[in-house]
Length: 93
Length: 262
Image 1 (cartoon, each protein chain N blue to C red):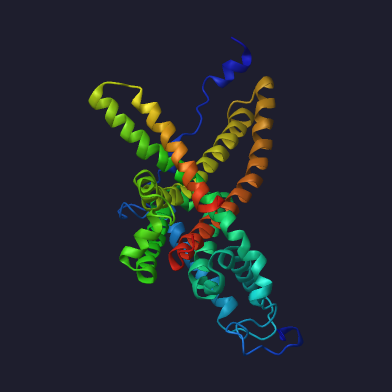
Image 2 (cartoon, chains in turn brown, red):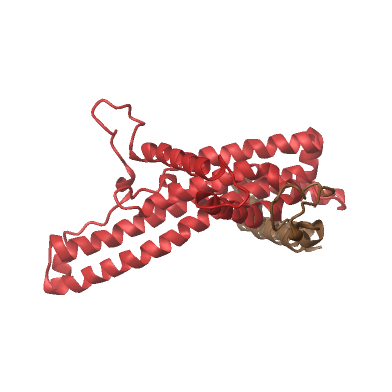
């Protein structure tokens, strides 16, 4: 990059966009590396809530039909476990 | 019964009714209330600021352009690039407007005489969240195909088929229902609770120092005033943080629809 000398680098697709401080793909890499972490951090609560709602809800339906109340905690715990497993699959591997 | 309880007996803490505003003037439409007026005012202020900063850009930025470019760089480097990479510039107009409008709306909560964070009425965050939600799904279908979008969303590759039965409903609910819901509620609830806390402490200070001053109650009133000042500072931080988070999540949802990379 030759932007430090004041000459925009016209060969780069973004070189001409910035007047100063333009970053090459190389320099930008460390910032985009944080993306997966941030993605995971913001997705985890939503996944856990969904897991509880889907499988806890199914447990609630089962307990309603069968009269066995144990299905509710089983469903909730199964949902949390599956959600945690899903987070591991998407971000942990 | 102690004297302190005697003076505290008539005190009523402010409740959700402090968010209810009557129409601005006699015969005004019922939607035209102070928060609605402030929403429009905020949009006009952001437009004016952006206009004065970017309408006539100079090679060497001065004055408003300097401030505007600092804001632009902040949103670009902290919000757009981490999630959108090389697509960041294309989405900057949306993200920049979103960030500064929400920031201003939130800061209205601590501006004297205005003193109502616009987003403490959930209708306003809902409009933004729904807008981002529609953009997210449109982009996802456009860039990954109708089947591809839902396949990438609900079926992370490389798993035995029975596992998908267990996981796909969680993915579906999380991405399409919980995520947009929490996107709006996070902003709304923070502004609502913050405003209520400020109203409570200032009511305590006002009641025990001016309305019903007693020797014992005065100490409580002083605590109320000190807490009001401290919480105002804290609120300003939260108001900035929530504007930042809302924009960050918008960038994250857009980025996730542009590239399915998981």
